[in-house]
Image (tube, rainbow, N blue to C red):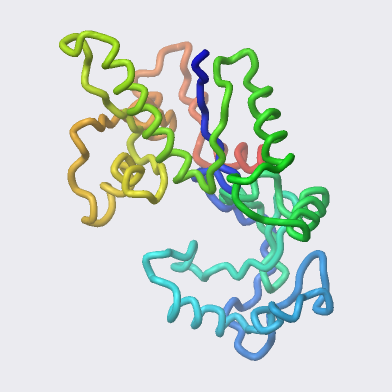
Length: 277
């Protein structure tokens, strides 16, 4: 029986949101005369010797090293208003080197929260054993695959691919879709088969491989690296009910759709922050 496939990234998921600052303990982010403050769990004594030099850098040095040795195409969030020097995380919170706390609604990797004690213990134990690829047999990979498939029961999805990122997952998903199209086309009259198309939502981001960039409208909306969509890519409007094409038109609101029903931007941000918290 033919197996149905789905792809799951092991380390990260692609997402976009906002980073809401919730506690403002304002201190200079450009301090030059002191080391970064250790916030949250752990002390200076806990830092491994191999990381001691990194953790001894002051904020000015961190910014200088970043500017000199990491490509400027790798942007820094909030650089226009003072970059965040994040040192620790716990649950849904981030902590910077000055002790400020932030509600993290943007992170696309720590989808189980920061510093989860059980995850820390499991990862630490596994790293002390082995960290290698899935070409070898290991009970963790086999059992994880089974548990993921069980979540989709009774769906026809029956096998998984383990990948390293959301970019790789989306790239592989496109390959699978195209392979399926080729396979089904061979079984049908070629004259009756429609050309394959990819539908992408305007302003969407799907990853950093060339294949996923080609279907990521945000890249076409900024810069000049990408200017023309491939012929098989179709763009549809973003379903933004606040300010998008499908938003409620207050001038045409009926008695059943009062203007008050249209939430403000602040209300939307507050509701999302409460959900993350």
